[in-house]
Amino acid sequence: MNIGDVADRSGLPPKTIRYYEDIGLVRPARSGNGYRAFSENDLHKLAFLGRARALGFSIEDCRRLLGLYEDSGRESAQVKAVAEEHLAEIDAKIAQLQAMRDTLAHLVRTCHGDARPDCPILSDLAGDPA
Image 1 (tube, helix red, strand yellow):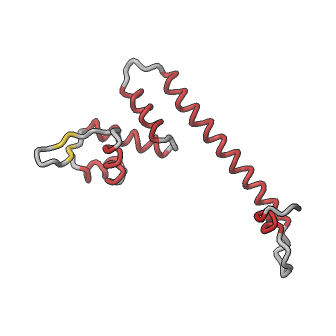
Image 2: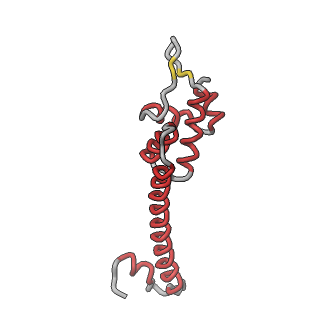
Image 3: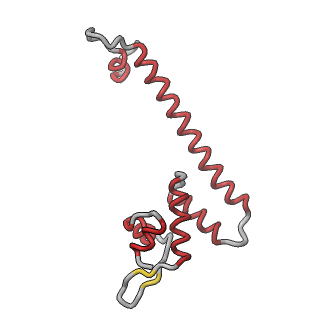
């Protein structure tokens, strides 16, 4: 398959596929004229990477997961550890976003939103004490 075919079938843009090749996540064969020749295995890896990235795994996590996927001697505990680490990062981000939301909601509630110039939102952003 050429890059267009594998892009269509994997749902990944050609630019992403080239990037994954550049960083060594996939290694398609090259034909005599230098064109990439993707195998079904390459397509499977690209779909795997696309799904992992959609779940928010970093490139390095994807590299680890792909290595574990290809290692028939792996222990599921290794895979679970990568996923648990990522889940903890997501939970931390959610907590941070919730705190941001709570702060902003409070500021919006306390702003009169009328013709007066005083605004607790601007005061908070400026670091003025309440």
